[in-house]
Image 1: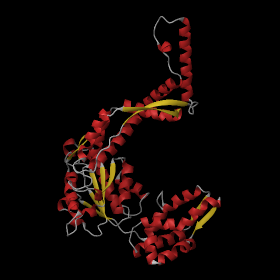
Image 2: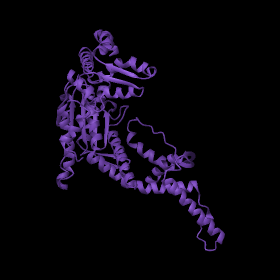
Image 3: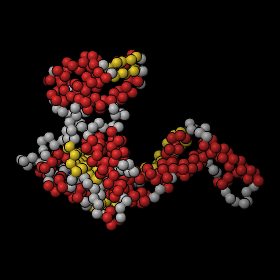
Image 4: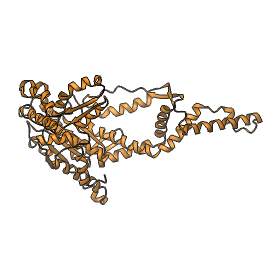
Length: 450
């Protein structure tokens, strides 16, 4: 969260080509979260996030921008599709469940941070339990009874020395492959009847009730010291951290820094002839409105206020317009950003510039078969040209077209590479033309293959 807007855009540029307006908008929105944490408490309550609506065709980077942003900031983040929600009373998910998912995400982040704080003590306790497993302490050795005989005292001292030697061997990593027995306890997971109208808010109540009354089942597992240590560290960490403290921190984190990305929001615009599912679509907008405006949602970790959660909505808006959404909902997304269609030059940049570009991915995959894959500039240009051309002739699916083209281009090589043992394959314009030209020219065939 310490990153400046310029630094955020710079980091996003490493993975996403173009779309500067969208990057700047999300960078400013994230920085405003940081600024809000530093203003006076009286003013802090008044500052609400400026929600963003991204408008643009599929495959131009809407989802990728939001996903990379969450990874970059470490904020609680979830991506949901507006189409999977329905109005209360219809079969489907309740829109309030997106807030519960966000809190679960925040809980994972907070728990990870708290575990890091206690990892040294948890490891010490885990190693002590491993010593007990490898050389158990008998009652006679551990007793403080002053009436022990001299022989028993000698045995006790010798036993403690052996335990100390095992501790040292564990610290030096000399017993990693020794086998120990671990007894683990689990509870039966209840089957919750989800997707029943009105039941989602009761789901966590049933879960908590079953967790309390369900009997524990004990099972004994054989594992190496290396595996057992990780298992025991996790157990000890859970005992060292305060469950209530983690839950309270998770709720606070979700309320103040949470980001919910709502994709396909254009699909909940009802058509002029409202019948069937279209009625539910309009209802989803009505149910979504109070959550975006600011309301309180009940979760199993307490009540969560949505007033300061940042909402980023996205949609292609091919058949509908943003102005066809409910006026009240439109008003809760004051920042509108239009993402541009991708050009041939954009495709060339996508294939070469990002740190995890498709060309680099396939080079890494082929390297596992001892095949050196070399992409020449004319080959990349030809591939980008075909992708742009097919997008113009058929459905425009943006950068996702490159995935299809690359698979088609390297299909034969991927199949034959295990039998080639080693070699160098050059991808130039002639190579691309030989494998894609015929398919791209046949429009009927390209609709199905590309």
